[in-house]
Length: 457
Ligand SMILES: [Ca+2]
Image (cartoon, rainbow, N blue to C red; front, side):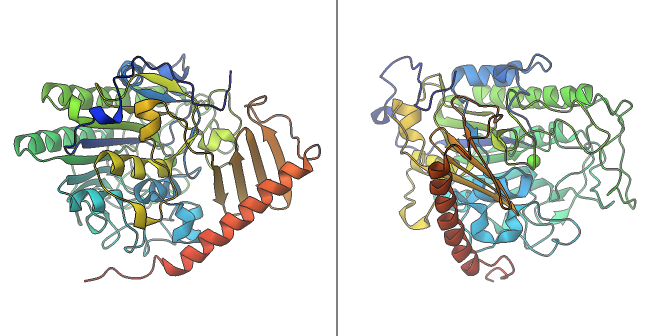
C-alpha cells in the first residue's frame, strides 16, 4: 500500500528534540553501490540474507520512498556530500565522471562538503571507500574536507586486486597510491573500525563516510577469483569471472552478504566502544540495481516492485533502500515520507548544531520527521541525466526522454505501467514547467561553480 503522508509506527513521544544532547554526535554514513531496492531482507529480498542491516532497520527509521539524486554513481555522490543537486556543478555531473575523458576534473573545490563543515566544528573526518568524484589529486577526498582517505578513486576496481578498469593500481592513502591486500568490503570495514576506535580513544567526535564498492561490478564475492591485473585494459571485460552470465545472482548474493557482515562489524564496534547512543548511522545506496546488463548478464539485482534499473529514470533507477538510526534518540519506524540524497547534509548539520542557512542547500532537514514524526514540507524533486528527465510531486511522476513524456500516478501504479500523459495534460504541463524552471536554475549555478577551477593554495 502506498500513501504519501508520513506513516509512523512510532513508539513513544519521549523521543523529541528537547531530548537531544547538545554535544557533537558521531556520524557514520554508509553508502552501498548499485544496491537495488529489493536486495535486502528488510526490503523483501528472499535471496539475500542481511540480518545486520535488517536489525539496523528494525532499530531505526526505514524509508520506503527514498530517492538517490541520480541513477548513477558520480551524480549521487556529488549531491550527497554537498546537499545540492549535482547539476549545479555542471552537466558532466549528469552521469559518471569518465575514467577515460574525465580524469582531470572533479567536484569543484568551491563546493562546500559535509566533511568540511563537520571538520570545521571539530569532527575527525574519514572517507574509506569509492570516491568517484575525481581520479587523482587535487580531486580526491583530502581536498574536500576529509582528514583521511583510503580506497579507490575510480568507479570500479577489482574487489581483490584493486586494479581499475584501465589496468591501473587504484588504492589510495590520502593523495598517494598505497596498495593493500584483502577483499574490498572487508578492508574498508577494517579501516572504519580502526578509525572509530582511534577517535574514541582520543575522545574526538568523528564523521565516518564509508562508500562501499559493493555491489558494483566486477561481481565478485569474497570467494570468487580475482580478475584484473595491472597493465591490462578491462573496458570490454569489466564484470569479473561469471560462469553463468544468465545468473549473476549467486555472486551478488555473496557481495551483499559480505556487505551486511561489514555493517554488522561497524555496529558491533559502536556498541562495544560505548558509542551507539551518541552516533547517527545512515545507510543508503547511490542508485538502483542492475537487473540485467547488456546482452549477456541476467538476474543481477532486484529493484523490488519497481520498473527500470540503474541509469534509467524509472523508479528502479533511483528509489533506494535507506535507513537512519540512532538508538535512544530516533524511535523505530517505517515511513513513506519522500526523501532524497540531498537531505543527509542538512539533517546531519542540524543534529550537529551547524547552521546551513547560507549554503543554499536543496535538501531538507529530516530531523522533525525522525524525532517527532512531523510531515516534511511539500516539495518537488527533479532528476536529469543527459536527455532523460524526471519530476516527482506528491503521487505524480513525470518521465521524459527527449520530446517523449510519460506520466504516472505512483500511488495507484508504483510499477509505472500506465502512462497517463494524454489523460492529464494539465499535470504534464505543470511538471514540465517546474522542470524547466529547475533546469534553468541549476544551469545558472553551474556557470559559477566550474569544476575546472583549481583549488585555492
Ligand atoms: Ca552506483
